[in-house]
Length: 177
Image (tube, rainbow, N blue to C red):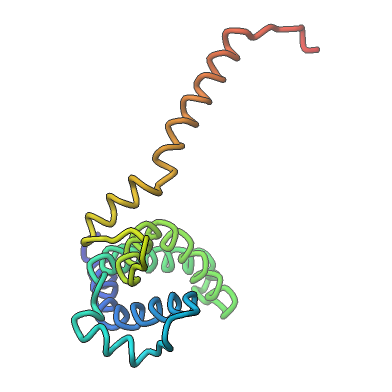
């Protein structure tokens, strides 16, 4: 099994080397578009401001996103593609497209938390926004300040167990009426 994942892990890891600079420039340009009073920002100005090492801000989080994504995506794609192939192993372009789309669903869903952390680390914080000091600090602050699922899930569990137990305790059989 490990030998099957090694190319996928290498693909995800090597992808970061090339895509991280592109992503950080893209994110900085997107945020600059939200600020109407800022001076004109271009890809060149972002690259000059950040420098070579700055273009790799958030790279650790990018590794945490892209390596698991590839480890999930490529095996899922192979499995879905095989299941959509005809008895001769042939598959048309539409089914290939569907295979890729279906494989992307679990991969993208499962790595979304790492993507959020990566984006937060790559955005230049504005006045009043939370500042992050690395991957762990970013994760902890998001968890404490924003991760509603960790606060809401226990509440939903308590609500439903209470409902179920009360339903059992007060159940009255009206003879199928």
